[in-house]
Image (cartoon, rainbow, N blue to C red; front, side):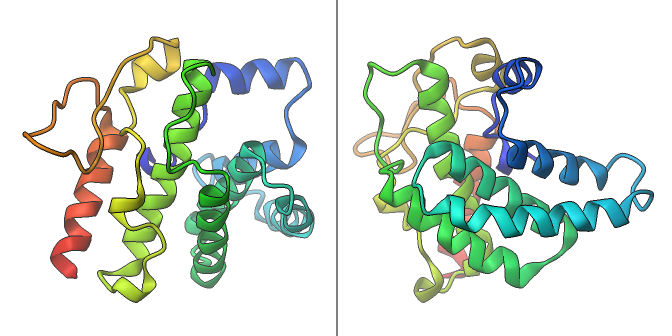
Length: 201
């Protein structure tokens, strides 16, 4: 699911093997995976996991951290595969507020590592795509207007996975037609969602 491609797989696996991965984050990932690996077989356990995550995630969200936003977006993805639309609707609004509170809609300092910078970008673009999908072209339902995102589009997966820094363009580029090199599938989907929203609007 490209719109949820904000997890850096090598970092995730390293944290898992070092036993430093947040248990809530891991439970969300396992819950999502269960819908695609032998779906229907352990649904009782999965429903219990979802209830446990919901009970624990909301107090944690009050601490506005990038890691907590990753957990919330993973929960939103889980809601999506479980078709819990009302839960998804409210949780995505909360995610948007947190992202803007953390200023993820602005480029991070060049001093931070590329992986962390790209993760921050991907989080806000994931929220942007959710926003455009569920706003349905209605301005009053939009929480992430395109002109408020001053952050570059997600790069290609290979660059993200292998920690190879690359420059991409903004969604709304001033002047000439934007240079498209380095943009990955997530970036192109963000462009398409923006165009779709503009047409519906």
